[in-house]
Image (tube, rainbow, N blue to C red):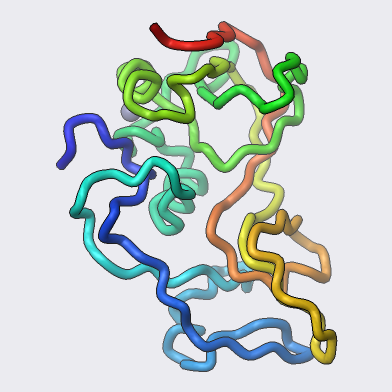
Length: 201
Ligand SMILES: [Zn+2]
C-alpha cells in the first residue's frame, strides 16, 4: 500500500474498459449479460466496470475509483482509510476542495462525490491530494442524502447525440435508466463550516 494514497483514489494500473453497450426503451445495458447483471445495483442503476490492480502509484488527477468511491459513499466510510469518519455533535467530517469561483458558496446543499473523512486522514489527504492541497474547506455535516450519480448519460433511443461523459443524474428521474454511473453523489445539509484553507504550506 502507498503510505498516503487515500482508499478512494484510483491507481495508475486500474482502468475502465470500454465495453459494448446497447440503448433501448429499457435504457442502457451492457451487451454482455454477465456484466449487466453484476454491475446493476439494487436500485437498477448500471455501474462502470473496473479492471486492473492497485499498482503503479495513485492517480490523483482522475475521478475517484468507481467501486471504492461507491462503497465508501454508500456506507459513509472514511475516504482515506475506509474506517469510520469523524463525528461530533455538529455531524460528520467532510473535507472538500474549494470551488473554482473563489467565492464562499455557503456550502449548504453542496453536492459532492467525496466521501467523509476521519481526523488522521484529513491531515494526510490535505498534504497528499493535489485537489485539497491547493485549498479546501472543512465541514461538519448532519445530513447527507444520496441524491444521484455522476457518469456517462446515453441519449434516448433514436437520438443521434453523443453520450454525455460527465452528467449528474438524479435518482427517480427518467435519465437514471440511461446512465452508466461512476460516482455516487450526496447532498450535504445542515452544514457547519469549520475552516477554509486557501492553500496548505
Ligand atoms: Zn480515515
